[in-house]
Length: 154
Image (cartoon, rainbow, N blue to C red; front, side, top):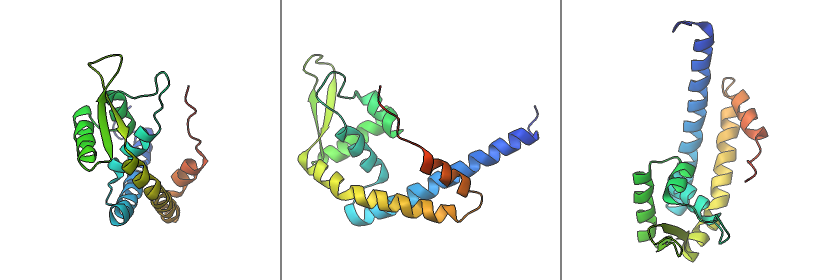
């Protein structure tokens, strides 16, 4: 295969279309969340991921797992946690069974803000997908997103 191989060119074009769709969606949601709730997309994602933790076995995420879930480096995730902790939306505490581990939980204020922001996020996502569906290059990707089901936790 060479760099000018039609299969590689098509693959590259598909990746560019996917990247464009993601960027447009994220930018639209970012504007809506910032305007209405003073939250970034990353902050919203972090609150959402952490709100799904539970007290059962394996229910709390380690920082690496959180970083993977919000698609950030561990250091960027730690900085994000610190910002939200400073705003009173998150709190950290030591793992009761491993004093080296630190867990992060969403506070009542964080849960309230997340509950208020969720409809904004969902509406902005729908708007961004509807707008992208008007573009013939993005329409197939929008249809694919719309047919995806959330993965069932193991």
